[in-house]
Image 1 (tube, rainbow, N blue to C red):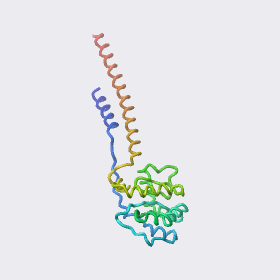
Image 2 (image 1 turned 30 degrees about the vertical axis):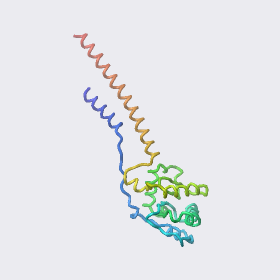
Image 3 (image 1 turned 90 degrees about the horizontal axis):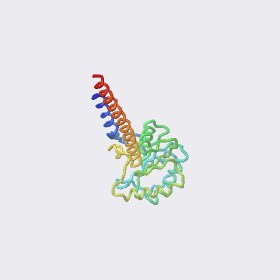
Image 4 (image 1 turned 120 degrees about the vertical axis):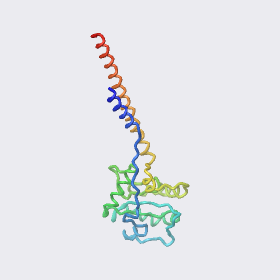
Length: 215
């Protein structure tokens, strides 16, 4: 009985204790990346970057894209034609080509899992601005993209997904969902275990009573 009780208490502890898995530090320099100028050149888009200069003070927009992808090209044209002239002093861009690079493709899946975006609708371009993500591209996203740029640039604590992943953190939504699931599992398991312990205790009392009557 004592051994069973120990096992049950261990299960309660194991289910109730939140285990955290820390992500391996990702060095994007180890991947095949291109900046905005490189991505435009690869897609054959004439750059309009005369007044565009990348600096350490700028935020970083990460883009997973496919060479020849129609929607990726539309997004890059939007960046080239509009974002550079309006917000070019605020951002720089790092892009990962995923159709011809398995490492970049695997990284995209990892980042998508981190944000909880990697589902049946997951695709390219996959645009990351701080803790905001955009799957695919259409002109209806322009206002939200521009708001995300200014919000991150003006933030005193600029969120960078690769720094967050290296620190073993998760996005707020994903973290809350995980906590709820773990807590529900803990409550359910604790209830089941309590019933088992109670039933075993009652059984032992009955057996002791019957033994005492025999004696």
